[in-house]
Image (cartoon, rainbow, N blue to C red; front, side, top):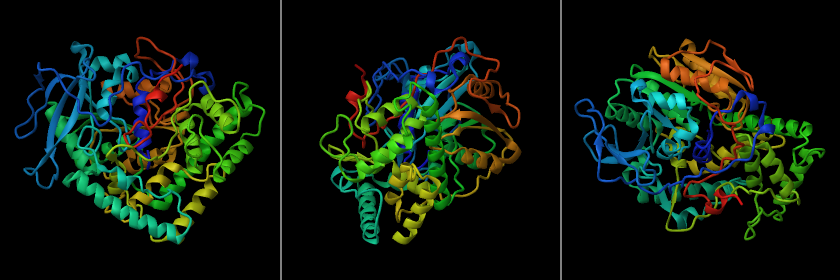
Amino acid sequence: MPARFPLLAAAFAVMATLLPVSPAVAAGPADAAAATPAPSATPKPSATPTASPTPTTSPAPPPGKGRITWAPCEEEPSAECGKLAVPIDWSRPNGPTVDLAVARRKATDPAARVGSLVINPGGPGGSGVEAAYGAPGFFTPELQKHFDIVGFDPRGVGRSHPVICSASVYNQMPHAVMKSQADFAEWSAYAKRLRADCRARTGPLYDHVDSVNVARDLDALRAALGEEKLTFYGISYGTLIGQMYAELFPNRIRAMALDSNMDHSLGVKAFLDSEAAAVEDAFDQFVGWCDQEPACALHGKDVRAVWERILAKAHSGKLYYPGVTDRPMTEIQVLWQGVLGNEGPAWQLLSEMLRALDGGAPPEWVPPLPGRQPVSGEVAHLPTAILCQDYRLRVRNYKEYAYLLRSSNRRAPDMRYNPMPIEDLPVCLGHPTTNPQHRLRYTGSAPILLGNSLHDPSTPYSWSANVARQLGPKARLITYEGWGHRIYGKDECSTVPIDNYLISLTLPPHGFRCPVGGRVETLTAKKKQQRELWPTDGLPWSAPLPAAFSRP
């Protein structure tokens, strides 16, 4: 995910309720049912997992490495929780440490156990602890038989000493889209003030939250789990953690599956251009579906004209989100509809939301208002600091910014731009970048499995294709000829090859393409229909979500 990336990460908490689709119902989103939130409670991201007093200890790690004491999680007793201490500054390995929150679900068939599978759901800002809690509803039963599924909250995230800022400073954030040099000057000054506040609130860890540091933490976790080599599955921003691990520890990889890849070689213009093109392509797919699908709430209407009408109403300050009456909806919040409705995809729900915003009836379930919003309480979380340390999004002045925006507009006449990076770019103005963009350098021998949808609005297909080129013959790329963000669980032929690789190291052939509804030999004992997905932002700096996660 890209650069908002907080939203993409939070989406995993919803994704975790889904199983791979049956080939019989995989013809496309038109056949999908509406998403139902997970029945189990979702813990607050700022909470610390606690455990009962009957701990067990993980296998003894190599000398000098940390240990994890496991005990049932208070929030999710069917999983085990623990903590792993790692150096705040890896250049000072004996210096101050930070505790990483870790959770695992043990392999369901101990006799078939291969080892530990470490997972990361993306972000930055996604909770690996909650991903482990939700693993039974996300991974196939076959994969769960063979692995302890382990998730951790990366440093600076959730339960692992999150990056926090004063809510009073955070709530002064200017409008994301700049329209003048005065706006640019205001944002530059504000970003500096916000950064100073967040550093003071967060402490020394603030300067050490990039994905290189997280990759070093991941290797410490591998050792603490007693694994000689790492088995890893990452989605979206989690793929950047995997890529950095491959650079740093090329000979410690058993298997690495990277689903919907970040491309860490892109400069700011290529980054924004590719994001704009991807979200426009996804919007085009939705319009095409709506034109041919009678169930679409806008079927028979000019969908692009409806879209323009909604944007114009937002521009005039007269558009209100269903159920939100205290402030008008912004244009950028309208654009978020085009991202979130295409990430699942959730085309039926997207069509109903657009009907509502155009003056029609709202859907039965209204997702939370998306995008950055003011927070209540004393502090706000800012995982965007991780992005700022991983990506040098250098923009010198408003003239250059306007040029970048016009370039995005040309590639996205309907969507204008992808709101994810546009919301985060100004936060990163002037921010030190400790892990700047570069081509992936991998010298190991283990093949790395990549996957991406052709019509992904958030991590463009071109990103995974470019990462595959950087890896050369060591890469295998699964091309899912469908829609949405993430391919695991979308279809049998986009899921089973990942299972086969992680379990037995069996790779799909070079150039493997997975058609929608495509069949391959299955490892799963049973299948369930995948529900329609509308990812929502449950991170602590977003609007409160309690009502949003219940249906009438």
